[in-house]
Length: 433
Image 1: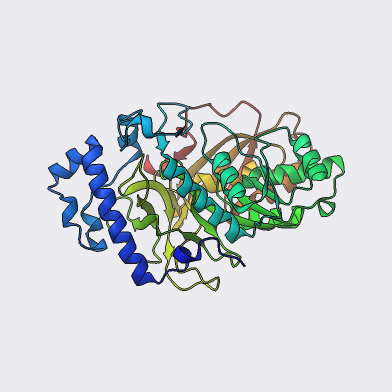
Image 2: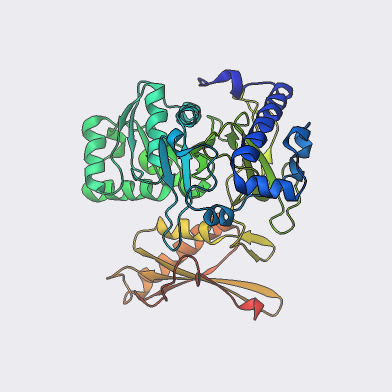
């Protein structure tokens, strides 16, 4: 398996940590000089960038939160004048002001290189025809993969979202070999192929890179079996750079974080204490090369763990395990951490479900109980009890395989679950009342 940037991806850890320290020192000086938010908080905490003499000093630096970014909307966190910014992206901002991020020309070059690393690790080569089904807009996903694929020398089909049957037609006619999508959309494609009589085995598809939502092992197996491809996971977020933060190699034993560009930490989301390797906590990232929008100890809100052991692929960089969910919506059920995003990913992949659901945690005696209520699509078989029972048992089995505990699933009529802005109302924890 080829490695795109072996100089850095396979760098001895001692050299890597020295490089991180040098780049961290430069980043701290950059933000202190050019970002009012950081200069003010550094002064308050009596932090002098020149005094950072080892990576162990990272714990003394303040965290940056998404709320800090929103309070400095739109350009308050930029570390360069706008005349040096050649690209602006943002988060969705559906219920409040979005997070705005900027890129200099050097940032775009670095981003392109990082995504080329991810795609090469997944097996994409210059001989591939890459079909991108992410939205081309303010979201970073489509553009990141677009430029990464072009850097490799692959051909890009910039399809964008939706129009599923046309997506399939393009796959057939243009001989698409690499698919970029969310896991649930890959399953949607497989289901539509079955419905219209297209045999995935007759396509040229061989590899898929999936992001934008959690890729459980159950979903990976389903995608691979139904589409006949190798499915790889990757991780990124707009506030840090977009896709290109981490990605799986051929051995798929965690996503390699590109530590020459980012310093990862795992913290206890409640106390902020740094946790040791292997322990699950909230992922915190510090950028080391970003010019326009550097981030110091950014709290991603994503729960995961880090593995520093050697990987058979030859890359020396730390691996992050799959994100288990968000630090702000975790439930503990019978000692197991359960995240709504895990359940949502299961429901979204099942034919006949609408995107409206509710999770109810309750307690009977000393036992925690979990119920999942979700709306059936119009015309679902309410009057066929045998089919409905089999359907619910299948959903319960899938949820149990993903979250590790059993849940009772209840199908409710369309439009009966109250609509809320954002995630509010999705989880009802009656154990707290």
